[in-house]
Length: 305
Image (cartoon, rainbow, N blue to C red; front, side):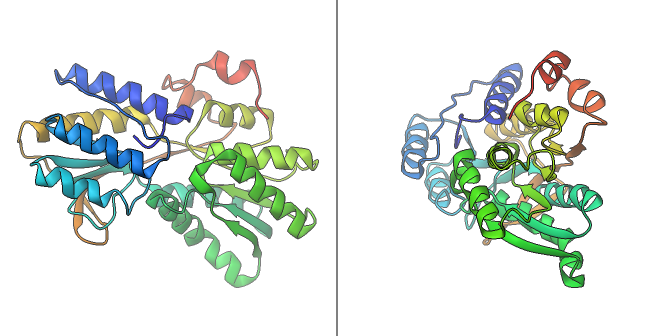
């Protein structure tokens, strides 16, 4: 795994472990916490230990191609989990439709703010998902921009998806525009948290609509509090169960098939893409709470930034 420093990834780890073990297999989970060299070293150790299959959440979509090559030399197949590995003979990719996530964010915010000054706070430039997300956002925004209805007044990547960096980006956007901002699309709920801290410090929280994604507890609490307007819920249990099933079959040498392919710069990778769900204050209860993703008490008992 790339990181265990966000609520989202702790959930992936626990659900994936549970799903794999339920299928009678053993799993070892290691996280590199954003360190490319460490992720490479960890992968090499796992490969040398005689694993049957490697599942990777890449920190750097390009750099992890070397891990795929090393695994294949050892006769081990590789699944990219949630984030694509670029320019490698990857065996399988499983994720949510990340371009669709960006489209959902932009549709939700343009419905609220069809005209005005927009800020886009992207994810990590090293993460292919951040690029897919941005593509989806701009698929929707482009006609508005071409008509002159929407102006992108600030557009910046967020190093390592770090909320501190997102906050700094948002502070810079506020300074550069003298606070003349009508809407913000943030690449996930963690970066949205940094954005909202900056908005709060400038008296703009709750006045400027903000989109996130991942349905992190803090993000959902902000929706309840009125400082964030929407998130995109990705039913992680569906992803972990799908990948666990694929992984165990592939580890046993069984054939697996998928209905999609995604080009990674080198090959068309067999892919499983799950449809995400838009969440706002009106449907929290019948989506993430009814799914057991967060409890009613956790969502409504306190508020975040």
